[in-house]
Length: 161
Image (cartoon, rainbow, N blue to C red; front, side, top):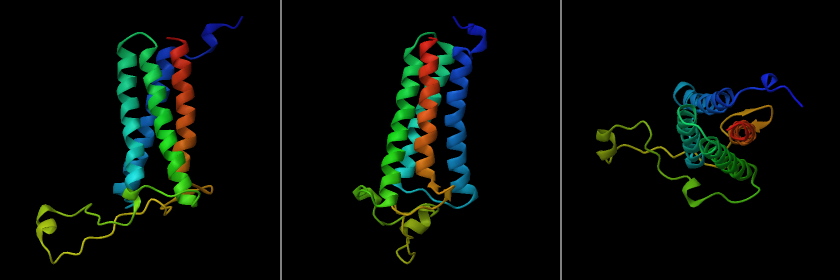
C-alpha cells in the first residue's frame, strides 16, 4: 500500500492542471501581442477549451466531487484534439477548414479604418503556415502534447475526488 502523503492532493493537482492552461493561454497572448504572431482560426479555437479548463479549476477548488476535474480533463482533451488537427493541417497531412483559407483579416484595424474603402485589409494568417516552432514542433503540436499531459493531471485529480 502506498502512503497517500507522498502524492499530490486533489486541489494541488487541480491547481497544476488549471495553472498549465493559464500558462498556455498566457503564452498564446504573449505570442500574439508581444511578438506579433497573429492567430489563425484554429489557433483561436485552441484557446477556448483552456478557458473552460480554468473555469472547471475554479469550480473544482470551490466544490467537492469528480465532475469538475472530469470537465477539466474533457476541456484539455478537446484543445489537444484541435491542436493535433491543426498540426496535421500544418504538415499537409489533411486539409484545413474553409475558415483556414487566406481571407481578409481585420485584427488591429479601428472601426474607422474598417469603414474606409481605401484601406487595404491584410490577409488573415493561414492555418497551414507554421508561425513559430520550437524543437521542430509548432505551437499547435506543443499544445496537443502538453494538453494531453494536463488531461492526465485532471484525471488524477478526479481519482482523488
